[in-house]
Structure formats: structure tokens, C-alpha cells
Image 1 (cartoon, one colour):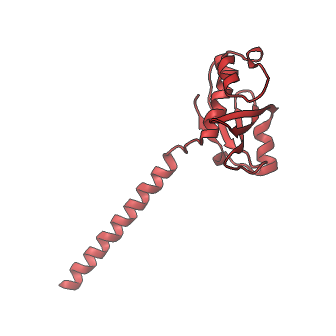
Image 2: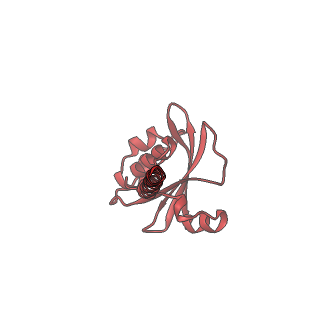
Image 3: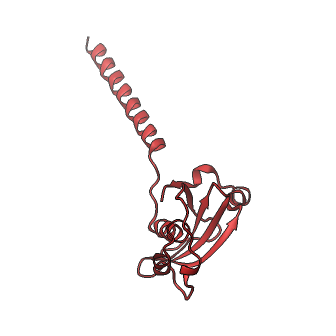
Length: 149
């Protein structure tokens, strides 16, 4: 009799463990990866420049003499893809962020520097960035985080 009770308890524990693992696995698949502070600043800069027409914010998030008010555009916001670049190793104070717009196959490379928060040190537009990163650095869809600015 005791052996039967032990088997039932073991079976119950095994089923509970399997269910817990399945729930955790589904949660991991469905949860969106969080953005780093550098990625957040890069998206804020890109959104100010490309979607919001906000040169003041773009200037505040950029290190250097460029007046971004001359380059801002105002267009409807769209889903962006963002990733830390594998081209340059990241450090605590420097990181390269890639931002990609799927609708027009363009992207930008933002060299970010931590100086009173994360700021853009260098900005470069790249046509076909997504395809280039996929072919050159074997970046997969899962390497990009989808963001709605």
C-alpha cells in the first residue's frame, strides 16, 4: 500500500514539474526581451529624428556640433527592429546599436556613448542594413527586438 502511495506522489511531482516547465517555456517564448538603456536612447533619438520632427530632442541625445533640426522628418510611426551590433564589441561606456525600419528596408547604425546617460556619438544611415547583417554576421530574426516607438 505504501509503495502505491509513493508511486502516486512521485507521478504527481513529475507531472507538476513538467507543467511548470511548460508554463515557463511558453512564458519565455511570449515575453518580449527588454531593451538596454543604450537601445532605449537610440530609439528615442531615431524617433525624434525620423518620426516626431523633434530636432531639440535629437540634439539633446547627440554629442557633437551637428544641428539635427535641419534633418528631422515627420512621418507616421512604425514598428522598428533594434539590436546590439556584433560589429564592434560593447563596453560599459560604448555600444553600437542597430535600428531597422522594415517598411523601406533602411536602418541606421548608432554609436552610443555613456556620458550623463546614453548619447549618440555617431549616426549613419544604411540601406539594406537588415540583409547585410543577416548575411555578414548571421543575424537571425530572433537577434532583433521589435519595438513600437
